[in-house]
Image (cartoon, rainbow, N blue to C red; front, side):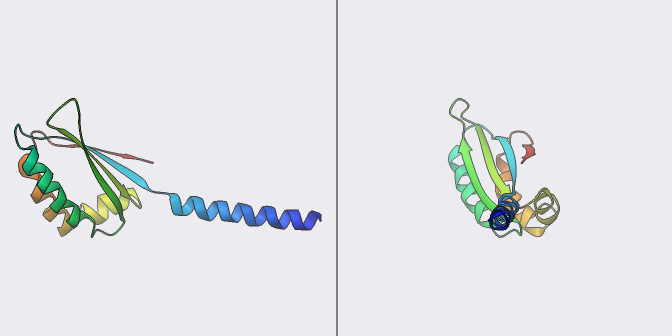
Length: 117
């Protein structure tokens, strides 16, 4: 009986390790302030940019949010497999240049980029 519980305990710990390893991802939080009166065009550009970034290796998901209190403020919640997937794989690729070309004309200031686990 003792052996049975040890074996079940081993299986459970192995399952948790595998689950934890597959759930590891990195959140890139981007804060953007855009130029006045460009919201409609910027939101159309976001849709185009999302089709580009979604092709990047290590990309998981992308969500854009519009600030309720500040009309010209947005955040992007972008999930990556790792910081390296974002900073090396994507930021050093031609996809990044294409992605940024859709959004850059709207930036009032350079965006703030931070990574979270």
